[in-house]
Image (cartoon, rainbow, N blue to C red; front, side):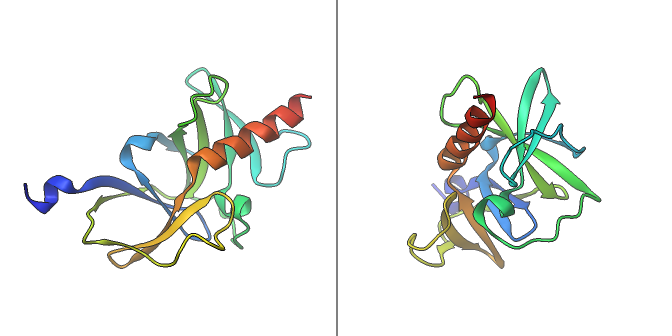
Amino acid sequence: MNAEQNDIRGVLIAVGGGRLLLPNANVAEVISYSAPETLDGAPGWLLGASRWRGWRLPVLRFPALVGWSFEGDVLGAKLVVLKALGGNPRLPYFGVVSQGFPRLVSVGRDRLGALDDATGLPLGVQARVQIGDDIAVIPDLLTVELLVDEALAKLAA
């Protein structure tokens, strides 16, 4: 078995203050961004909800969630629809605003290196890594889903 067979197809998503690295299988679709319906009382990182394939999709701005500074520009922005991993029937998908189209990458053990240990990383970030010349974070999608679900539950109460 050669090294290419051990590679995982990944996606680098530019999110303002940095890049997210996710397995390609987590991405359901990439669509043009349009301002979501605002949710009164939502935290600043939860921009609102958009309609997508019959679902009411929560839309978040990842840099705001994890406390990164960023300058949000919606010109050319995309909405990356991610498959939720937690098995919550109320939250099978959520959207993350990206700056442009995500970029497909091949992730092999020899090209991926952790930059630091997991201590001190913001809530919602599992690891900070270097892949080739790019620095990215691997988001903790289960924690992100829980934060989105908690915020939506508070709004519904």
